[in-house]
Amino acid sequence: MDNAGGPYLNAQALCSKVGVVRLFQLLFGCTTFSLVLHRAGFSAAYGTFCVFVWCFCFAVTALVVVCDLTRLQSCLRNLSWGNFTAAFAMLAALMTLTAAVIYPLYFVTLNCTPDCVTRNHRLAVSVCAGLLFLVYALEVFLTRARPGMPCSYMATAAGLLKVVQAFVACIIFGALATESQYKKYVATQWCVAVYSFCFAVTVVVIVLNITGRAVMLRCPFERFVVIYTVVAIVMYISASVIWPVFCFDTKYGSPTRPSRCSWGRCPWDSQLVVTIFTHVNLLLYVADLVYTQRLRFVTQR
Image (cartoon, rainbow, N blue to C red; front, side, top):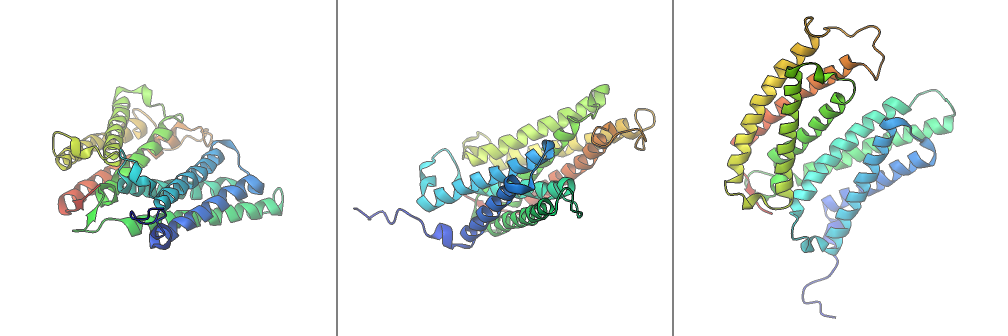
């Protein structure tokens, strides 16, 4: 057998700091959803979302580990591996954080109802879910870009913020779909158009980097991103003013939560969530612009 090209297996993929962290991701991920399926249990859309997050992150992490170990990523010519792994680590950290908050909030109680075994399993799931988030956050920390060093765009602060912006937009869409009554006014429909446009363009920017096609644009990619970020800030400023006015002003809505509004199906709650995360995304876009202007990275595929 000809070994001139070096060993087929890349031992560094498992022995490096990032490799060890990914092994812990597999361990905690497998443990978490196994406990849920074995005895802890889940129900409703919230539980289904948590199980999906843990299974999805485990599957993609396993794929990443196998590709790194066998060097199969070199065969993926239409994929920028560095951008893909950086974007996935950030997305997985956000998703596992959300699941780590939702599961104990809806399924964990301190009393033994219906039985102590189920309660203990759910407590164990909550602990493992928190540890799973920490190891994904650790990977983001270890693989983040450093000024002046060669790196992938998605590993820079601007690239990681793009993932967070898209994730926050998904939270906004989830709240809009839950009795938010955004169709009552043209102004609130404009806000939905703002969220949709910015989300779509952000996803396009992420996909262009992951597929390695950002360098094929006719205009400089960095200039395009800066122009888009400025436009997104202006649009989000308008939404951050218009949405609260048409939802909480006494002329159009209610400044306080209606007393007869049931939890989980209350338009006022959904409108409040949209308001909060609209301002969160506005701050993220401003931070994105600041990092893009102040920092310079030497990017590579």
